[in-house]
Image (tube, rainbow, N blue to C red; front, side, top):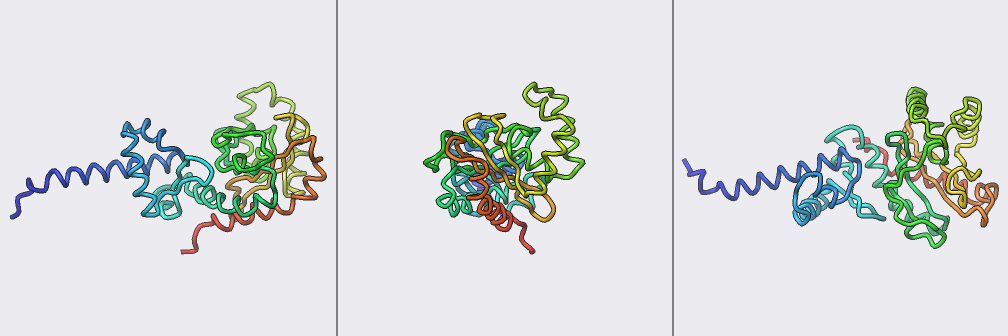
Length: 266
């Protein structure tokens, strides 16, 4: 029988690398998206080692880096490793190329947001590329549910039980800026109009007064997995002009992301 001791150092190094790689993959899958620096801090792994592991995982097709930030996500190949963020990861991965295709046509910046703990969190954006953006560094930014078009679109299209849970959470948080928008009559009218029109709007100065936005849900089957928003400077474009000029294209963007991010039939 061969002496196992001869292979112990190499075997030990290989097992350690495998364990670290799996730990990194599990961490990304649990977070939805994260960065190499955040992984290094969370797992107490040297940052150069994290970069090497991510490079290997990317080469093997298990993770993908954002097209517009340092964030990394799991891919479709890794979707079977767990539930929760797998569908969102596919959508976020699909958004980058779609945004790249449509951004020159729309010009105004686009955001892709997903729901997380009573807020819509920006996962992909063209703010860094749009010549008309007044914001930078938007990846990871948390948007309020009731005062943004993204939050309103999500609330209008998410399952009723999810909507009630989110609204209950917001009422318990009791943010003074949210109170006017928690009125039952206002909510019913807003959500009904959003579903009727197929998009949500923000145009009353309730959040970032210098800008307005419209948002379209990204529907995979009957489930809203994310929301696409277009943001513009209010003094440059009225809401009616924005809807007339860009509403149909924004719906195309959401549809293209949904199709590209849908699970494979296999």
